[in-house]
Image 1 (cartoon, rainbow, N blue to C red):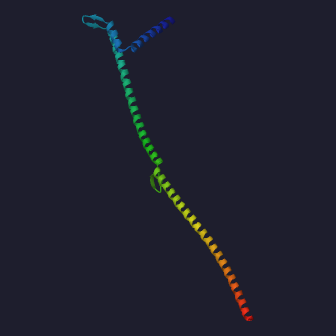
Image 2: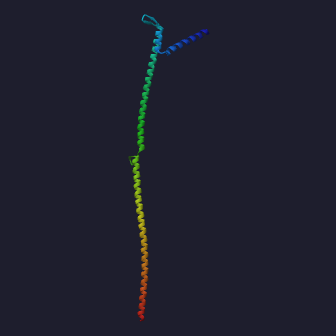
Image 3: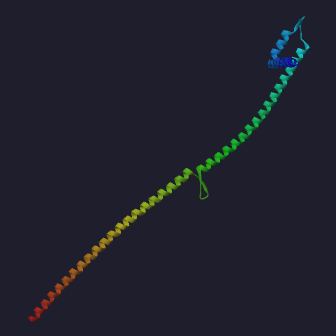
Length: 191
């Protein structure tokens, strides 16, 4: 009994391997084998029916496999096309978002007005330069006014000092003249 099972298993293995080999053979090779193994009768080839049916079944299986592969490829192609369309839409949205982000990066909203950064920088630096120029002019005018005030104060002090000197000299002269006058009056009284 064991020998029968082993023998059956061995035969089954060889049979399956021969079928699997015939399945792996190409259709063209199977037709060539069928033609070469068939008998000739006049101008015709006589083919065994079971071999022809086996080749026919193999052709059907191959066609079914090819059709299945074609369907799978079509489905895969449809899925890939959907994926490509989805990715294209996502790319378009991302590009629009990128454009918006770049515009936001390059533009500033200042007092409700959207201006380009370089324009804004130019305006700000122009204002700063104008303010520095005005500050410089005001500083120069202040310094000039301060110098003029200092000179006027110095001249006023000099004038006051000259006036004091003049008053003192005038007073001394007046006193001197009074003394002389008094001396003359006294001399005239004595005489």
